[in-house]
Length: 117
Length: 113
Image (cartoon, rainbow over all chains, first blue to last red; front, side):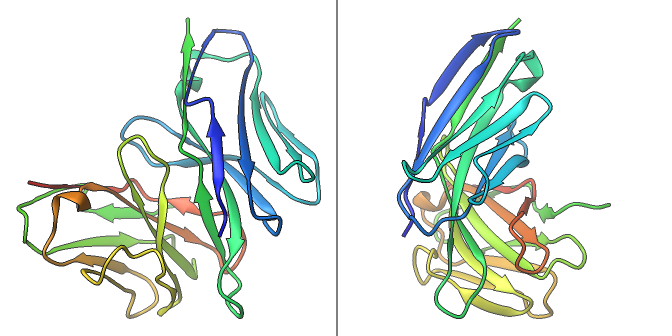
């Protein structure tokens, strides 16, 4: 099955700086990579995702890059703000057993981002 | 519109008790997933439903864990004879058909004493 590794486990940046979180995956068949933001005690929220047919995707201050050859993808947050402080999880998909067309996600262990004002 | 909801939000059980956790997915979402999230870790897949059919239960840690979705909407995760290692947040997520995006509920924090 898929194995997703994420680093760093904690990241502290000054407000206005950029933050980068990196993930690697093992299953070459994985084709969908979402990123979730989870504030303390709250649900994981999808913030951006990327499919394997593109190398980069941007949404305002957030961008994700994907390198299929190296099997790694990264989350980039520019002009960080205190409200960006949270735990961020990456995930990679794998299809289920043959005949079942759904996406089973394997999550990284999370990065706790602290944006200092 | 309404998101995924879960109840109860918090549950304390004595070791050996049975518990039932409920998930209400987004209306119209065919796919429903259960995950277990240990403290400081990412969610781990437990089981998946497409409508009422449980198509994958490979992540259920033991036969004490049982999930159902009898009418293809609300789902219940049941844990029998709870153990301390079952303490975790149990997350439910739903997805529209087989598209990729999964939307999570707020979770149920289970503490087994």
